[in-house]
Length: 286
Image (cartoon, rainbow, N blue to C red; front, side, top):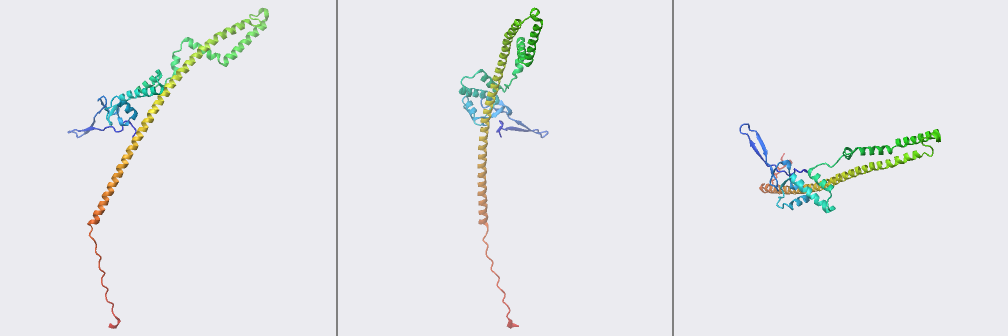
C-alpha cells in the first residue's frame, strides 16, 4: 500500500435497530496529534506515511507527537511549505519573489502555468498595436516588393516627364528625403515592437522557471516519499517472513511431539511362531 490512508484507524461503533434489526456502522473521528481537533478520515494523514525529514521538521515545534499519530492535511501543507522554504534558503540563499510564489502555490495547490500571449495581448495599447503592425509589415516580403515597385514607379515618372516638368528631377532629392524620413520613423517603431517582444519573452521565461522549480520540488518530494514507503514495505515483508518462519518452526515442533507420542503409546509386537511341519508318509507302510 502506498497511499496516505494506509494504517488509518477503523475504529467504529456498530448500532443495531431493535425494531428492524438493521446494523449501522458509525465511524469515529480521528484526533489531530498537534491541535487535538477531530478530523475526518480523508482529512487525516498517518505520520508513518510521511517523509522522515518532514516529520523531524514538525517535531522541532511539537516533540510530543506520537509515532502512530495523525495530522491534518492543512497542517502538513503548512509545515511542508516552511520546510521547502528552509531547504531552498540553505541551497540558494535568500529567496526571491518568484520562489516565494512557487512555495505558496505548493501550499495552496494552485497551478502556475499561464498563457502569456493572451494576457499580454489584453494589455496592449493602441500605440503598441500600431508598432506591432508596422514591425510585422516592415519585415515581410510584401513590404520589400511593394517598396521596390514604388521606387521604380517614382523614378520612371520623373524620368519620363523630364527635367522641366518632373516634380522630383534627377538625382531625386525629394525621394531621398522621403526614404530618410521613413527610415527614421520606422526604426524606433520596430524597436518598440522588439522591446515588447523581449518583455513577453522575459515573462514567458519567468513563468517557465516557476513551473520547472515547482515540478522539481514535487518530484523530489515524490521520490523521498516513494523511497520511504518502499523501505516500510520491505520492513513489513521482513516481519511477515519472520512470523511465518516462527509459525513453521512451531508447527514442526508440534508435529515432532505428536510423532513421539504416537511411537511411545504403540505396544511392541511379538513375532508369531511358525507352525510345525506335518510328517511325510513313508513308502513301507503301504
